[in-house]
Image 1 (tube, rainbow, N blue to C red):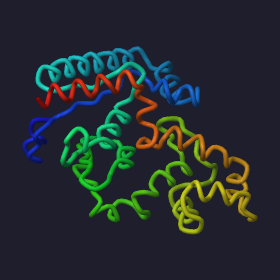
Image 2 (tube, one colour):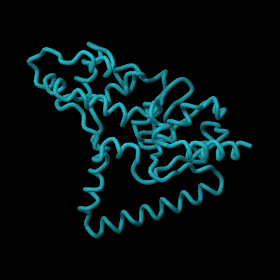
Image 3 (cartoon, rainbow, N blue to C red):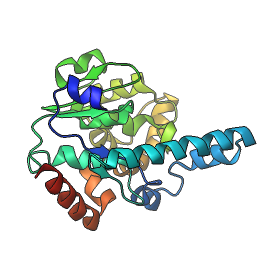
Length: 237
């Protein structure tokens, strides 16, 4: 963290961390991230021990970081939403340029002017000016692609038969996922279009589950937002 902060000449370092699964999303979709719980339940004894040791180290790392930096972490709130909140209100928090340090491509939903992401896995940056090197659609339409394709890692179902390529084609033909929903039913013999006609409501659910910028405050909760403001103001002052 210190090395990256030096490389990017950062004035402020803010840590965001999960504390369990999102209460907000579980209320919308009870199966949200259930696949992870099912996987953990099937662990061998060796895997269980390794998993516990990892999280012991993770918790210890957060304690060390908290000695020097604000660690934003709230029960039932995910780091994605905390990062989205900081991006959404970066002017209020006087954050001139935000570098998101994460390997999670979901955070590319937050890319905008003066916001970039560095992946510590691929060692690559995603920015507005190099967006086309990573995706075939405009940044503001990335959420539409995710609504169509879903997210297997989070157990968010997409439309059966629609992967990234078909999603991009549908967006090029009809516009955003909202526009696609408004165009339903679409007359077509293709099975994936028929699946889309039958599962169109899933697009609206997926917006609520995955549109970080729109719903981050709902996912965080007002009491936690008040605490975030307090923590950051104390840190910066």
